Image (cartoon, rainbow, N blue to C red; front, side, top):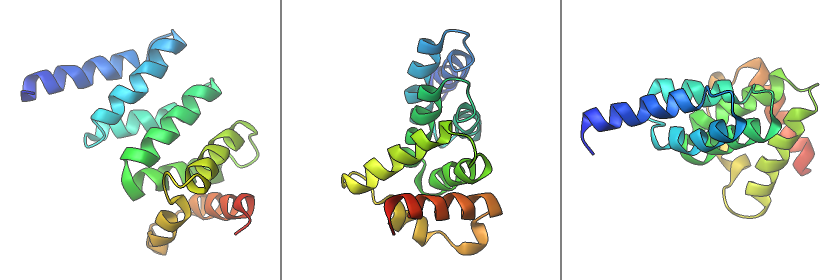
Length: 136
């Protein structure tokens, strides 16, 4: 793929992620994951975790965790802690629990490998709540 077509693909995914049509936004999440190395794609996925539709929030979190590496997980933990009183983030926490307990991704092991000084206060809270949910 040429740099120009990659740039236009990223722009198309960013535009789709801002659509008023929720199904188009959902589809754009996977596309944004293909461009995770671009700061604007990562930032948009992080913003989508605050969408008004839970499915979009969970899907964005899942892409960040699966393809964004430890820094993607860190973004998700931050949201879990920042919005700990919002019942919508419970769905994100359950998705993380399922990834971990199902053996698809060792979420807690990855979280534990993140240097403590990289964890914001919100991320620490999110991680503590996730550990409690998982009984660890």
